[in-house]
Length: 177
View 1 (cartoon, rainbow, N blue to C red):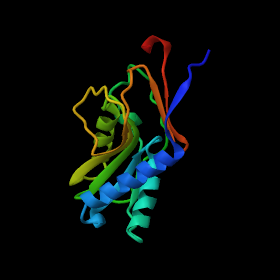
View 2 (tube, rainbow, N blue to C red):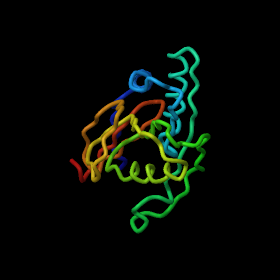
View 3 (cartoon, rainbow, N blue to C red):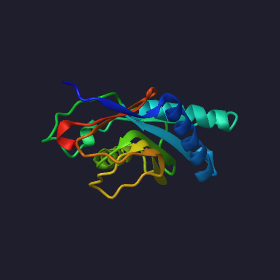
View 4 (tube, rainbow, N blue to C red):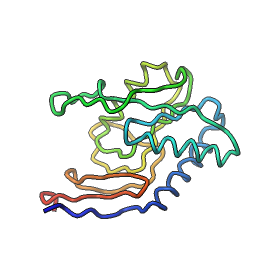
């Protein structure tokens, strides 16, 4: 028997959250010329694309560099899960002295973000890295906090959270009830 999923955010809610985060990025970064948006493969890339589109729309034409980073080789849990290369890293500019907005779909333990920070350093030394996530579900194992959040969703550690353009869904597993 499959566990039921609960819709937390609908498609319109996700779209509104992306627009709100785009406004927050613009407000926090007075010089958008130094900003680069980088999505984490694979969950953060579509959100990063949408953020760039929203920023371009809101500012009447400011196009930010858009990149993607694969953190597979930077993970610290090789012994727990196999290495699966998700998609290639594509960083279109040198990140040295840039403000990087790192984007992911879900922030959980913080370990994926730690790996992404290490991967970013292979492409220059950013002036600052800001973190944007659609969902912050808590349960941090590392001292990492997002700068921009679509929605804080308290979850049980065994719950599964899925994020797409269609919405945010949480699947609760029997042992978490």
